[in-house]
Length: 190
Figure 1 (tube, rainbow, N blue to C red):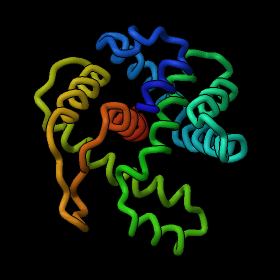
Figure 2: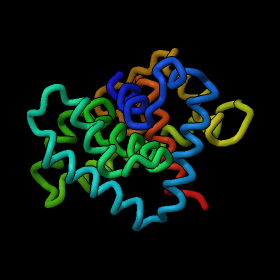
Figure 3: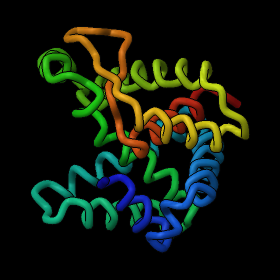
Figure 4: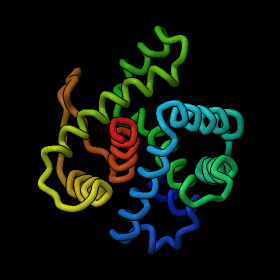
């Protein structure tokens, strides 16, 4: 729920509009366009900038969502398109606890000199699995529409993963599914 609140607040969308399918698709399409336009190094820099700003300003901040919104607005400079991309990055940053099991996170803490980069690499693997599911998904429309519809339908199904399963993505909310796929697709194409 936090991600959709961030989405609505950062972009300045009215709440009802943020939930409408067409608004979601347009928003995802905008984020895809911006993230692709940044290129590999630009995406990495944008992610790093948001991560550093959140770490510096939001530790212990209450409520955390309002701090995330403030940071994202500062980084995206009020530009709606950059704010859509910022929302994707922040949703992904907070997806780690849902998508990566605790033993893996603890291993990364112990073994990685750059925990954020290590977590991003693990998340990339999960997003690749979601992208494989998306490729098999029977949905029409452009990339943003397919991502939206896939994540809506996937959220309504139960996805249980056995302990230690490497090729399984558990239930995730639409926001995390969509943000992960937008990040992956933007990083893999064009």
